[in-house]
Image (cartoon, rainbow, N blue to C red; front, top):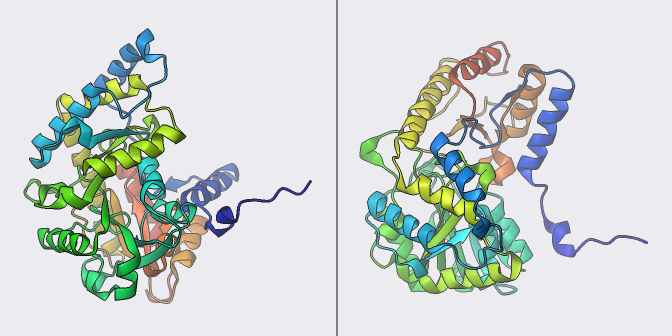
Amino acid sequence: MEIRYNEKLKKLPPYLFIEIDRKKKEAINKGADIISLGVGDPDMPTPEHIVKSMQEAVAKPTNHQYPFGVGLPSYRNAVAEWYKKRFNVNLSPDEVCALVGSKEGIGHIHLGFINPGDVVLIPEPGYPVYNTGTIFSDGVPYFMPLLEKNNFLPDLDSIPEDVVKKAKLIFVNYPNNPTAAVAPREFYIKLIEFAKKNSIIVAADAAYSEIYYNENEKPLSLLEFPGAKEICVEFHSLSKTYNMTGWRIGWVCGNKDIVAGIAKVKDNYDSGVFQAVQEAAVTALASSQKCVEDARKIYKERRDALVEGLQKLGWEVNLPKASFYVWAKVPKEYSSSQVVSRLLEEASIVCTPGNGMGKSGEGYVRFALTVGVSRIKEAVERISKMRWKDT
């Protein structure tokens, strides 16, 4: 019997980070001492008080059954209280839905609001799930280039009028993965006006909002702005903020009707988020945020070590204001993929090719700050021994 895959699967590009992980494991099996700066998976453990809360919660028989629905009231209230403290945004429980990680919700929102032929406006380079969700829903992707000359913000005015008329959903992601850019107030104000004028739902991916390096320049929430709740939802996660990537817990919040649409999709695809994880998430959100502050200090040390090191070697790289990524221009006369291959083969360093996250990422590579300072300095030392055509 010939096994035939769905045509949508055939349209999918290879999932970038699975391929990076495959190449890393292949190199390790050959004996290479890999310094992994590829996938954005924090190397620091989940804080002890969150782990302890989970241990207590998992022992409760009430948490051993299906956790149907939009999430525990205690969890949704904790999200609302966290938003009030962090962004001065007021949320009611029906404006919050628990997710099995923000990736799940980002992938599912299309199924609630995109019909065949509808256009989805997608930033590129960007998180691959924005596009895969579009493909699965028979939507039409329109890629908005994130260019350095535009401060890595999409140029909304350059989107053709016929595309705008068919657009039903737009994704934005700040602090940005992979460019590490932060959106200013002016952009969010313009985005809300654009979306309201054209009846387009805004899906804001804010997974990196708590990894910032200046207390006076904290990343903004789109929901802070007047009119945002009329057309916007924001996706968030405990993964990067609390080193909980494997726990799979996040949320979507904002416009209650959009949240309800996502929840209806989820009702038909999963059985909710494990309640013990939700209880641990309440502990994370409601208790002292010193662990988050400590993590920021660690990432800052790593950022400074990598950026300063690369700059001394002649690489063009800006100092990121947020996220744990460094977006670096590759040496001249090389493509992104060529640089990634050379770094792996000659220096046993894993990083992400910019063009792997969209064609506008050509000419860049992304380094994730997910190893300690000593290993970052070692990576810089290994790179210093390589020879490039323009150096």
